[in-house]
Image 1 (cartoon, rainbow, N blue to C red):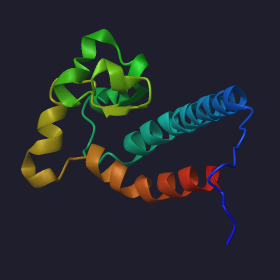
Image 2: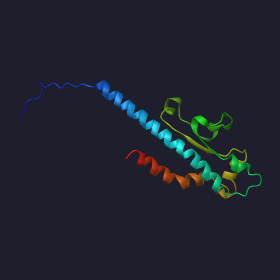
Image 3: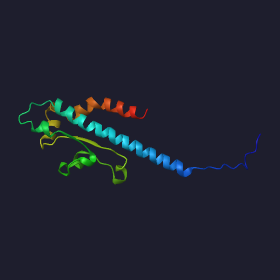
Image 4: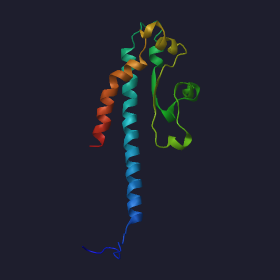
Length: 139
């Protein structure tokens, strides 16, 4: 049996390995942001096209919007609708917000047993495709 007690291992390239890992992380984050940006208009279009209510003024349909977290208008009060992560976590998280732009949007979503809801149904309809596309990016 060999005696390895005095064998030394010399490791070189620690700094390069760390740089490569950091660069890979940046590329993944960039790719995830591109993915999210590609889905913003798709979510918005689907919601507008499939909103189940009959338009009276078309304001509610036109005001349906999707945004990336950093693009949400300040007047939107997104913190009321979304549980945002802490500032330490936010650098690694991408949030897509699909929202009503009219003050009665919450009533459309939550009243009449969901008959006029579009946010949840849009997410339910498109989530499987979103998931497939996201997973395919990393194959």
